[in-house]
Length: 96
Length: 422
Image: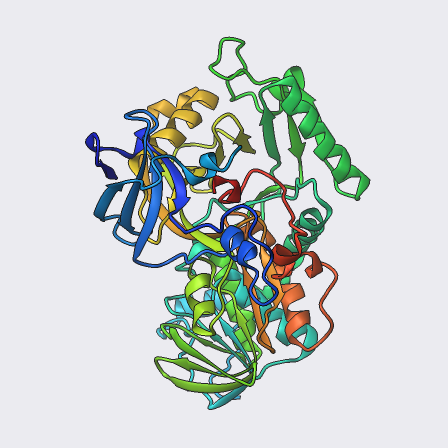
């Protein structure tokens, strides 16, 4: 799999770390909703789509940046690559 | 009952069919679907077929249909590395897998189909004192619960598995290992055929090339299953479809805590017997055994990202082969003959989901990731009990779907898509 890094161009998948799906996460402090548990859904439930998925990758052995990609989970074809809008992994920004 | 035929394999049947001019009878004739079944099992893999077998033999339930979208033995049942073992630390995982290990011994006779269970020993290598401590903890826990396991030091390992590279200068020196002598390998495709033969013989309908395209519910209760061959009314439904679990559960409106990943396996060219145990190398993860045909069968980690491609990435192939050569250097003289992939469904704690769903009479058995094969007969045993209308068996209670909501995760470690990636 060649991953189209928007900073470095197409690079081998060995240079990257998979960072999970680009799901929108509730912000810290979101209370547990009584009807739908937003935290449960965000942490555990996956769309697991057969087809296009939006996901985050980290270019570990390259530009060391988080990037956002649209990948077909059946053909492994990339149709969209962009710099992650957060600039860093959302998990890290919430770490403190 | 229509289409049910009991076929017995014996020396006599071999002779008769060798001399006769008729072909062997088809043991899986395509049945006409009935408009209504008591139980519909979606997925004709090892788990679904084992469930059908035990529904017939333990509970006399034969108004059952097993719907398989592909062909028997075409899915993960025959795409794994055929290893069976029960070296698990946590109670729930151990209990189920050890029960499974106990069932293999008598299954060939019970099914009238040779599963070639070969309890040749499973050796799990440790590469540091800490790792050996962890193995010891696991071995002791197994012994306390009635299973057998031993810790081998380097000298004992040299006796037990003389083929492995035990030199101090190895890339990841080996300090010892855990051995479970009852672990080994089972002929994986025979499991699908054996359970299917028994189920069909009892009058259960096993339908190949019959994908499910809809699940209808009524007032929160499952009512019928829609297939490419028509709609079937049913009392109870089990979804047992491994990699496609999110999609099939989605037909009933359920969202699952599951990711599907690609798992690869490889065989080398066949050679004379050179390795008589199953070896698991923990430095980078690679498990190796030699088949009865003489091929070395290698497996490793998943590709590391969600995939339904059923074809692997080169980086994983390279990684597994590098690890295999680190442990058994003579493997570098062999060529890889074939490699293949399967789609494994992994849950957020890396353990399976079994039992009820929010929809009444709809049950799931999924999320086995790459640990499902060894559990096949035990899963069939307990899921049959669940589907026959009895209370949820103790063995599967910890694996309920709602554990993710309640926070009662079963985290054995080692597998899972790691929710902390978030």
